[in-house]
Length: 238
Image (cartoon, rainbow, N blue to C red):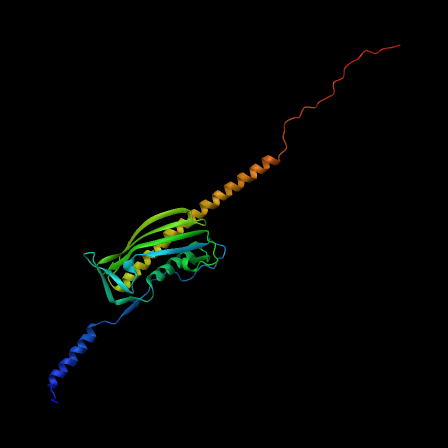
């Protein structure tokens, strides 16, 4: 067997090259959306809301962060990853924000709805949620409110935008802010719809009470008295 001897300088150069490559490849960073809520409502008498189902665009359902480039092309940052499932993170932001803004803890995710009888259901579709080093964070979504019978009560298409400094961390902050604004839009719609339903129920109850009162009130019409007719007959004397 013939041994091949390499110069020491060549070996050192190879080691240094490998070390340089190791330094160039940055370590993975993990990120999570921020719900912006420090304390949840403890009220058990608030409106009952079922959040979901949530539909998230296919291009967002991955572990790596999506980066939108200046030419609107999409790339994946292999060094920036979500700490958990992005749809799960979005669900938690919406759930916690709605609980805080509606001042109610009677909320549940669509996947955990067992035994819940919601007053309203919020169905959400996320068509776009991304940003880039030179692109602002953009959210394009649609939400629909359904009543307890599945009837559509309200719907809206939302497009929001938030600036950032360009770093991945600030991009995640900006995306979190957009989801918080989406939750605000939803909570206002839930409050308006709940108030409308309560007003309609109150009006119906008042109308029912007036109808019952009218039926129980005695009639003021005078019923004519029928008197026997007396005929004067001739008195016969014998």
